Image 1: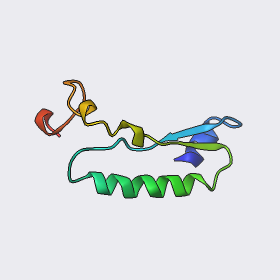
Image 2: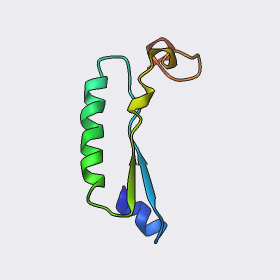
Image 3: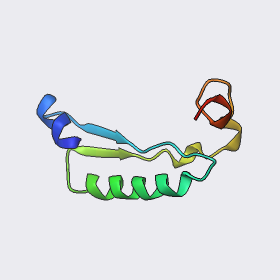
Length: 73
């Protein structure tokens, strides 16, 4: 993904955002995916990892705008 972005935007910083947290059975999988993404980003000096772990506030999970189990996901 970073290589593709680097080719499309040479000389630019690439920001890779982590997968946002979930409040269900998939959350541990997402944590593992984010660890892998973060580890891979360390191989690029022109890429930055944006960690979204600060979005773990349960009040943000059910806002009638984002997908959740009650809204089909």
